[in-house]
Length: 111
Length: 109
Image (cartoon, rainbow over all chains, first blue to last red; front, side):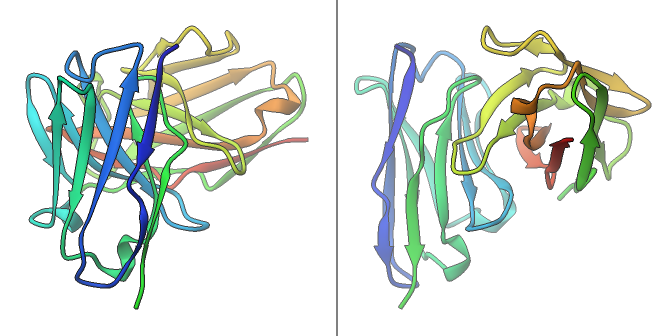
């Protein structure tokens, strides 16, 4: 079965860090591209980052310099290292490939 | 960063046809923006319907189709069903960076 499962979310204080994981099964995370998308409560989807097998890594402006996307092919997993977190980063974070979405992991940034 | 605009809401009658559009603040939407369309129902994760302008996944109902229309990306639903009531998002890529539209709330009524 083709699926992705996110983990690593939680409650963190402003300025803190979290690392999200996205474990894939049924396909290789290295074969195409993978993206992170977030959705704040009651809001629309926001594209956060992409890792592409040929083109490299990309970020939305608001997370550049704070977030880092990476990939471990041996674990068939991608990661999103999130540093200097802000309250506005609070959202449900989804991992997705071209056609497969996870159920998301909730990140809450609050003091 | 570019702004991607969608109709905030649309209504279609059961069995009817509706076209949702996706406009770019930078100008004409082309295949080079690799337009994607997603469907999201309340409390659920999004689901990819269309990738790269017009390509469907195996789970995409035949009544959905993607195209470029009048300088925009378009999602056409022909023969709307009650289960098609949902929020629809488009995604465009600008040299690797993605931007979602604000979403279209589609009502089947």
